[in-house]
Length: 112
Image (cartoon, rainbow, N blue to C red; front, side, top):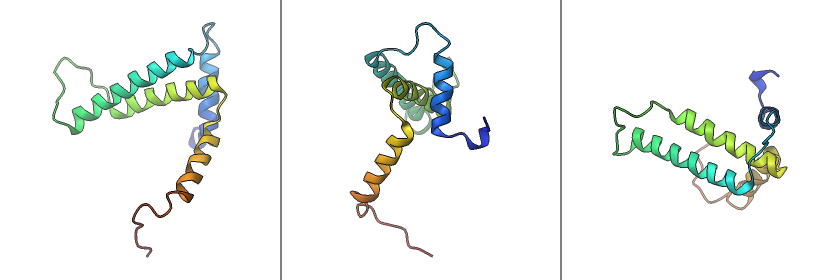
């Protein structure tokens, strides 16, 4: 797999290969939703430490926004895989929605 051209489909396959080596397999949907919520909370905490008014304690880990986004993405991919959802197709559908329904919602930059 050429990591310079790592697609969403590749990501879903990579996660599936990882999960499929374990007897437990994917968690149930409600468990994954709880895990996504947990990871989103960790991302929120990291953003608050970086941009908000609550600095980290000296005893806290040095996690990064990138790490927390990666954790959230992993669980999201697990959820999509367990549900049989192609994230590429989901992305295409949502972008089509934004390009049609919301096409005039925001102020466009001037073309040069």
